[in-house]
Image (cartoon, rainbow, N blue to C red; front, side, top):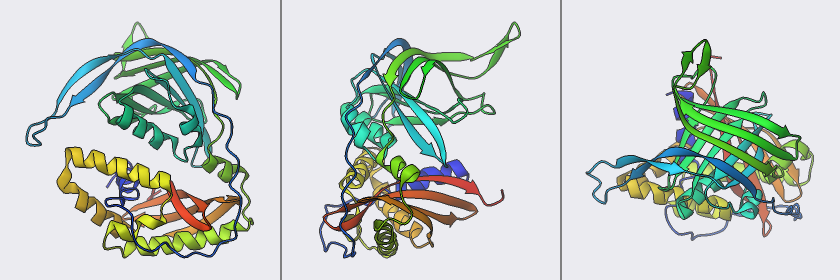
Length: 346
């Protein structure tokens, strides 16, 4: 299994347990009552211009008939930009969209990429989101063409034959961003100059940089010795054991934060649309993954918000993850995970 496929599989199975409505006894985890860090003022909506195209998928009501695809025009008017920590390094996502993003929702989401995915599915908005790594180079591109699904592509200097992205910042002072995004595919050299084989989008954006997410604030300024860390770690360990022995989704659902439940429900709803027979297989994969040992490697907290870092192995691939934990009504609940894969051969 490749690292990319492993990450995608784990991301799905770790958030796919809300197959049924919640019931059953709440988990009992002793915890010191702490205050949730205050929410920050909503980020102002930015502006965007330009034009591009995206691939729209038209699903047939008969699952035996393959979906159709066609190109649709994309003319963004709005933008949103936010920082995200990936493997300890600071990255920036720049989003251009045809609908005004719900900045208050995005600012307060513990997983903004997943919040954008839900926005795509619920509002059928069109957007292109380009991730810029700590070296200023594009590393990922997510697009929503209005059909409710998000296409994801990994970018890199050694991946010129596939999806491409380019960023040109005119302003990037840590508070405000302005510049241009070009998306495309393939590589060609004309007159000694390198360019995309095909250009799929050329956009300009101006946006205030959103504040760091609660997860990233905990990761960067959280206290390893905060009173909530021990309770968050204990709750995570009990959740992991419960997930590995679960017989139904009802056994796991009480452990999750409301946002985690909503994300899981949205993913399952999408799966039901395209492959309803796969729902039970996904749940089985979820429980099987949690029979593996998860080793906690660290934890930090700010009041009632904590981040638990952990590792596990799936075959030859080691997964490193951070899970946001929130103390709600005195009990620690499990939020969304952010995972990355590192080959054990390295």
